[in-house]
Image 1 (tube, protein in one colour):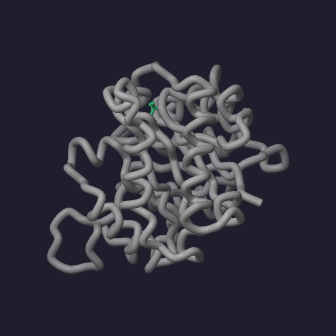
Image 2 (tube, helix red, strand yellow):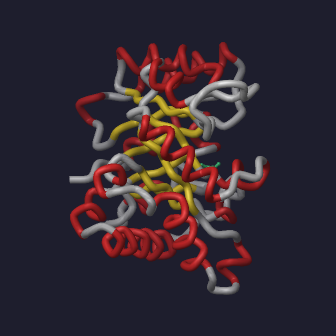
Length: 251
Ligand code: PGA
């Protein structure tokens, strides 16, 4: 059966001391016996080593927020999947709308990043989602289908089973304009249908599909109650230990 996941994407926030306090507080507040989901922390890359120490001893898994599309070599400023894997980082976010928008990452590059991660035994958390204008023009299904197929559908069945998909409508990210539970369920079920069409029903049923975009301690349980919503990718609300733990508990 597929697993539920709640992942906290810290983005470019927190100095080192704050980051250490936050992860320690989260680890402390979570009770392993009561968890229904895997909990992933995605800190800035500078803090991955510190965070992975908590990952070792506690109930947290760790994800990087970005990875190079290259293997290794003269690529100043980049971090490779093999470096992350050597640090025992298990997951990495790929295709976040902020990377697509501010760093011009296109589908082809994102597909290469996915390949680098899988080559190095890591699991991509692959983000897809439409802009507000896409939804207003009822083009949102097409946009999501394109992102999914261009970023992931070159994978074979076994490779695809290592991918977590995150549906993040861009208009909901950091805006407080959360998708309704109906909108989330409708898109998640559409995504699962596309996976079933491309691979098979079993693969689709085993794929974890997260919702992201203004998910918080108040709305998490109603979003997660949908049958095709398997947890969340949480931005702003993951920077507060109490709120994040409430979201984890809602899954
Ligand atoms: P948000 O961000 O929860 O702050 O809307 C979600 C994300 O970008 O993953």
